[in-house]
Image (cartoon, rainbow, N blue to C red):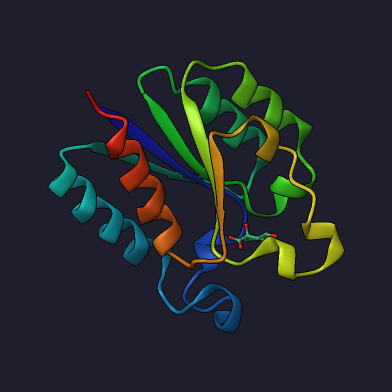
Length: 142
Ligand code: DQA
C-alpha cells in the first residue's frame, strides 16, 4: 500500500505561520510523525508540497504508483477547479485534510472544490488529521 501526502501553498510556512490557527509544528516535523506511524502500519509514503497550482496538478497526474492520496490543497481548496479535475482524472482515491476547521472560519473557506469527490474530509484536528487519514486508509488494507 502506497500513500502520497500532498500539501498546497503556504504549508511550507508551518511552524511560524499563524501558529494559533495551524499549530507550531513545521511541515517537516509533521511528515516525520506521519512516516513513523506509516512504518508501524507498514504503509509506504511519499510527500509533496508546492506553492504552485500547476505543480500540484502535475504531481496528482503522476500519482499512478499510489493507492491513496491524502491532500491538503490549502487555499487552492477554495479556488481550484484544476486540482479537482486532476483528482478526478486518476485512479487513486483521496482524503481531504485541513489543519483548521474551515467551517468555523471566514465564509470564503466554507466552499471546497474537492470535498464532493473525496472519500471524506478531516478538518480542525491540526496535524492529527493526517494521522487519522492514515489510520483510515490502513483499515482498508487486505
Ligand atoms: C487550510 C485551510 C485553508 O483555508 C487555508 O487557505 C490554508 C490551510 C488548513 O489546513 O486549515 O492554507 O487548508
